[in-house]
Image (cartoon, rainbow, N blue to C red; front, top):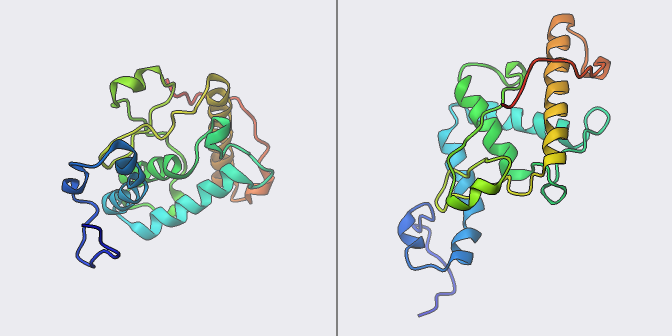
Length: 178
């Protein structure tokens, strides 16, 4: 029997709703379920949200347009950045958003089909899926360079207490994803 509305007591986080659902329908709920799970898992939601805004602005446009925010172009977007920032917040639960810096949390546990992906960022809610499935070798190389640049810029700004606009963006640093 079809229902025109859902009651207020419906908990879409309960896996029971996915039991008899087709794959496409179950995946359509994954965005909501992953977001709710991330918010449940971070120690400080306001710090997470502020850090996430800063990281997404950096990835998209700040200060000179890093342009590394686009799943269609093989970079990270949306839930991928959400998961990475949430993991950073979990590792640093008592740090303010401005002091989080940038660490790269990496998950290597995925499904059998994920073995062909270069980067695994697994969504926290069932059905788990790799949110970074479009990352290619060339976009991964650019991501590594830009994250290294961001780390160096962050360190320079912490040492000199200057604005992010003054960052030179040198690429030589020892940070590596491997």
